[in-house]
Length: 119
Image (cartoon, rainbow, N blue to C red; front, top):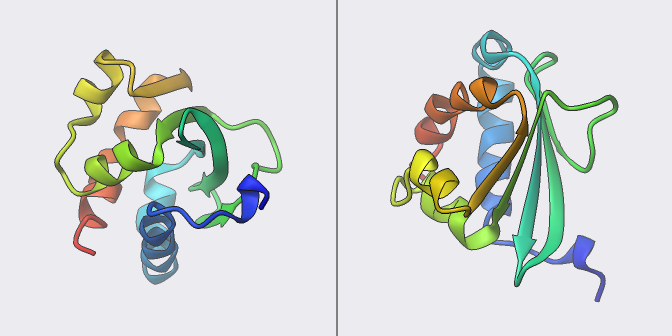
C-alpha cells in the first residue's frame, strides 16, 4: 500500500482545521502565510498537508508555490501537540519538530492548533 493513501491519526486534526478555516476564513487569513506539513510515520514521510492561510485553504498535498514555513513532525508527535500534551517549543528543541523557512510565522499557528485541539 503506498504511503500517500495511509490513514494517519493526524488526518482527523487536519480535517477539523479545514472545517475551522471554512467556518472563519478571516481568522485564517489574519495569520497569513503558507505552511507545508510533512507528517512522518516510522521515520519516513507519510503525508503532506498544506495550510494556505493567505487564501484560507487547507488541503492534502504540496502547496502551489513555495511555502513560507515547512514543518516536519511525526504523526504521533503532531497528535500530542494538537492535544496540548507536547509543547511546540519543547518538540522543536528536542528535534521532534523540524522547521525550515520563516520560523517566526510558525509561532502564529499555535492559537489555531490549540483551538482545534478539542476533538
